[in-house]
Image 1: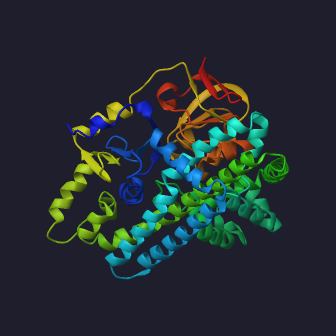
Image 2: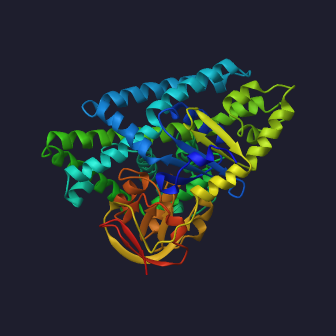
Image 3: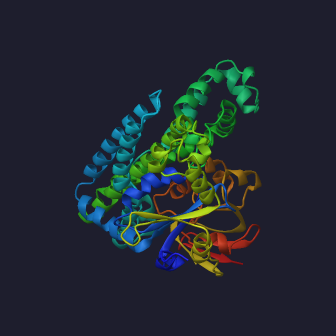
Length: 474
């Protein structure tokens, strides 16, 4: 048994979340840049082939968040500028990598360096400073309703931007196409102008429909289905946009009445919300295109899905003489592996075999509780039945009026969030995707409830009190 497993500590020391998609190499070259000041892990299990677990040691996350807070609280726009300069550089080097017809390891190394700079600015640090800011907001703004308004982002997320584009498409359709949309006609050829419009929308915004586990962009037919849903609820969608605009105006007025410290905290929280959203947007755009690079080097008897199990350094070392060595490494990691970042003074360590089972027993152990506490993100109180959703593969199980439980939510979750009577997530804070969307939908929401999947099961009746952030079994 590896000595490193003994350093993990207890499950309660971590914020642990399950993510869709096995993106081993992507995680590795991004996360390894931030391993020195922090401790966290990524866990990949054979019995969960489409998911991985990320665990962040909370005390290090909050410590790093405080450092970022102290550095930028008086000038949050400097953090914003630094982040965007890094993303622009990252995108430029990435475009150079994938556009080159030949395998260019030098370009790949340059891209990795820019990703690592971005990782240092925008990885765990953003989550850490958000947690630190949440505590500050609660301390400085006592009134929950006032706090809810002041933590509503001024920034328009990429989800909201894309939704606005769909609304604009529906609003400007000719009567023929609009009538077909409202009749849920699924044959694209039946429409006059819509196919061309949706094709263009897919090209510009297709990445926004994906998630970390996506293998492809959505088809035009899939985007058509979503457009139909919006067309059939047009008045409601326009009302939501109007209410969002109203909330932002209310927030601007309230900001003028705050003391300087509280106003600065809210301003920095707005910046963190924007940067987290843009960080995810960049990753979604890159994660699909990265396969172009993997396919370039996969001619060495490995598929792109095999190469994903190698670190970027290992990918660059591949040659005809070491194929058997790396084939063995790939197969071992497929069976299950855990990457420990920042332990024992090393940047990272990849463990396999019995260490993985040991880590699973420590980190994913089940704890039975009758009630769990989290962060109130959208006020309200409701009684209903639970539905656990691990990924979009479970969406067809969700029934209207059920209480949605998920690790976190992404844009593709919005369709079932609209059906839900309440929303509960295992991770996230008051500016997470789940928090923001639930406020738009005026639905009770509690975020950051650790162990929710281990304690609440499909069909179980519970009380969700999002006024105080508690879920109780009934």
